[in-house]
Length: 382
Image (cartoon, rainbow, N blue to C red):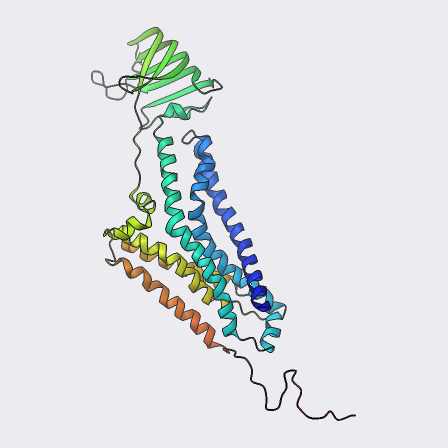
C-alpha cells in the first residue's frame, strides 16, 4: 500500500500540473478570441466570464486525457531516471503490478472525464448557447463602442457615437450613414446620412418593435457626387431597428443535446456524438496502458527522450478518432459505432509494448534462501 500511495501521489500530482498548464493555454486562447469580439462590439463584456465558465467542462474533457498521459510519462520517467523503479524491480515489484497500480487512478480519471463528457459538457453548452443567443439577439446599438465606427448586419449602415451615458442608455453626437432604397436608375448609390446631438432606444409597447430616437439633428439624402439631395432638420427622428437573425450551427445544437436525448435518437450525426462522448473515458484507459511501457527511460538518455514520440502517438490516436467521427458525420461511413474501431489497434499496441520487452514478474527465491537473501545454516567465522 505504501508503494501504491506513493505512485498515485506522483502520478496524480504530475497529471494535475500538466492539465493545469494545458487548460490555461486553451482557455487563454479562447478568452482572447472572446475579448476581441467584445472589443469589436460583437459581444457584451459582462458575459465573457460566464461563457468561459460554461465551456470549462468541455475543455476539461479534452485536456485531462492528454494531461494524464503526459503525467504518467513524467512521473514514471523520473522514477526510472533516479533509479527508483530499478530498486522496485529489484525488490520483486513487476511491471504487471505497476500496470495494475496505474489502472486504479486511470479508472478514477476516466470516471471524472465521463462525468464531464456525458453530463456537465452538454449542460454547460446549453447554458452557453442560451447566454450567447440572448446577447446576439440584441441589435448593433446595444454593443456600441464609443468613438468607433461599427457596421450593422448586412453592411447596410455604419454608425458612430462620440460618447455614452454611464448607464449606456443615451448616445451623444451620433452619426449614422445608411444605404437607401433604389431611386430612379440607381440601385445602391442612394445614401442617407444622419447626425444628431443624442440618441436613445425606445420600444413600442404595443408592437414590441425597437426604435432609435435621434434628437436635434440633420438628415441628408441623395447620391454622392450629385447636387440633387435633400436636407432636413429635425427635433426628433425615429429609425426602426431590425432584430438580428441568430443562426445556430447544427453541430453546436447536437453538442448541447443531453446524453439521454442522443441515446433515443436515430440520427447518424447525433448517434456518433453519443459514441464520441463514451470514447473519451475509454481514451483515458487506453493511453494509460500505452504510457506505462513508453515511460521506460534509460538514465543516460535523459528524462524527456521518449516524450516527443509518445505525444506524437497520442496525437495520432486523437486525430484518428476525430477523423472517423468527421467521416461518419459527412456520411462517408454509415455506421456510428465505427468510431470504436479506432481503440483496439492502440490498445493492442500498448499490450505489445508491455510484453515486447521483459515482462517482469516477482523473482523466485533460490532454494534455501531466506527473506533477506542469506542462506540457511550457521555462519562461518573468518
